[in-house]
Amino acid sequence: MVKKLLSVLKGEPQSPPPVWLMRQAGRYLPEYRALRANAPDFVAYCLNPELATEVTLQPVRRFHLDAAILFADILLVPHALGQKLWFAEGEGPRLDPLEDAAAIAALRYDPAKLAPVMQTIRNVRAAMAADANMANAALIGFAGSPWTVATYMIEGKGGTDHEKIRALAWREPQTFARLMDVLVDATSQYLIAQAEAGAEALQLFESWAATVPAGLFEAAVLNPTARIVANVKAKHPDLPIIGFPRGAGSWLTRYAEATGVNGIGVDQMTDIAAVKVPARVALQGNLDPVLLLQGGDAMRAEAKRLIEAMKGKPFIFNLGHGVMQPTPPDHVAELVAAIRS
Image (cartoon, rainbow, N blue to C red; front, side, top):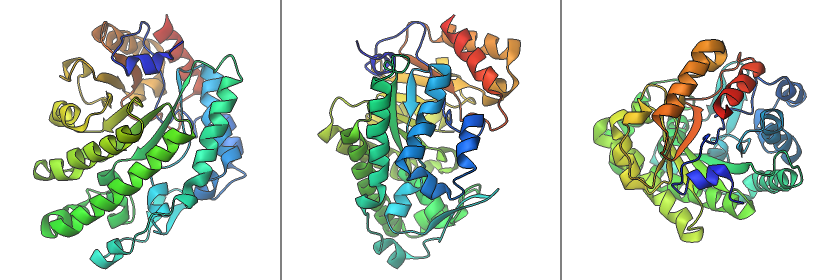
């Protein structure tokens, strides 16, 4: 039996649609917080296969979702490239910023640093296969897309308008291209290893697509993504890949045509029913996370509207971004029940 999520990513509509949620494994779950309390170093937490396996499984076990997504972080790739990474309490990720072309040239990808991630994938696949309540859920691996990861590597943190990397891309296009090359190669290796460990689908998170100027979009987003997809497909031609270029707006059609992805995540600022993509490409999204936080009639009504709007099309129900930390778990259960009814 083909898992529902994988069927949709082959272009086959399902009714009701499969559902999983970005950041479904996280701080809104009390069982996650209990584990996290004993693991204050977030990088070490992600690289502990026993803990990462349990966190990956928690939402699937609780809500019977159609997919698990690997518990990791998009900044593990810079970590494996030799850049110092840490998480400041209440502030998020921090890296020692790359200051010049020499710092970029010194980056070297060490796959051994991410071997624990592959063990997590093997553990999760085995655990889901052994549990009848999770056996039909697919396992999604993931990585950050080069532009998004590069913003952190250059800026040293998130939450900015990314002036430094935009300036670098305009002022020193060859240096910027070198950084994209490094990240394409490392991300391709990382995702291929995930596939070989047992990931059944992959997602590329382009979380900061909205900050890419139009004149840089091809060099910063389309070309690097297309190269990664081609590299992975050369080794695993049937493995589906979802791209999530958050905030890409009018670029979504071009992204679908140029990158070779099997599915596209759509944020809540975009009318998902109006997105034009090739018939083979599934769409994923795009309930406002605030509605999940709120729950109730408005959430159920919007979920119903989205499902009706996408009826007969390959569609994966998800949020337009991640589950918000204060979200009551009961609201997730309520949403899943509404989708399946």
